[in-house]
Length: 223
Image 1 (cartoon, one colour):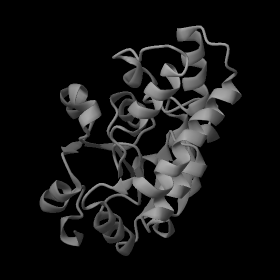
Image 2 (cartoon, one colour):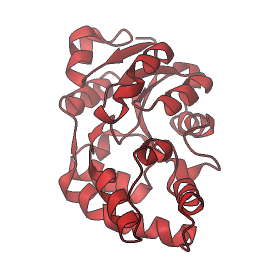
Image 3 (cartoon, rainbow, N blue to C red):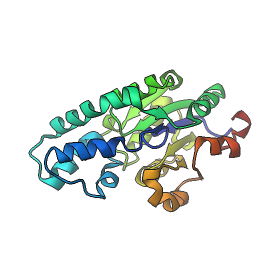
Image 4 (tube, rainbow, N blue to C red):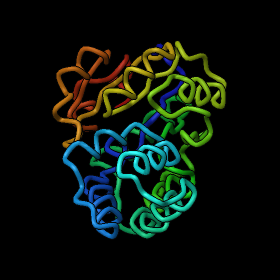
């Protein structure tokens, strides 16, 4: 085994939150009489809440404040993440195998800690993680490598010994720029970027079961 830490994105990678943010985005825009544009989800997928709020206010000319819009999103999402969103198939077993092997586990998510904590606790895996990092903890979001380096420092592992599991192209590029190895995991919402993700990532898989079958970064015997 040639790495010491595994860092997981949540939405679309570790958890199956497909459709949740599309519904939330559609609802809050429709409240303001705006039909959600087709490209909106992709535009905000790698941004933290505050950045997405700034972008949204500017794009649609809203009167909302960044703080107010972020709080509205958080309130709309809190129930979903605490009760209705589950891990992707095979994810729990994959995490437990890594933990058993002594790999340090961390999150690097665009979600606020309140939502990350809720969904991981609800799925019974929060205790497997050694550190939690939200894009909110960094001056810049996941479109930049800073947050990945911060996550590595919290785990006490050099970036070169970290593997990042991501499903968004811009985030995968940032993780690689941080000096980390990238494993791209397929999600329907990033299907259009799958070929490009394959050029950025050291390996790609369409599911955690595929990772278990094929092995990943020298840990096939553990899975």
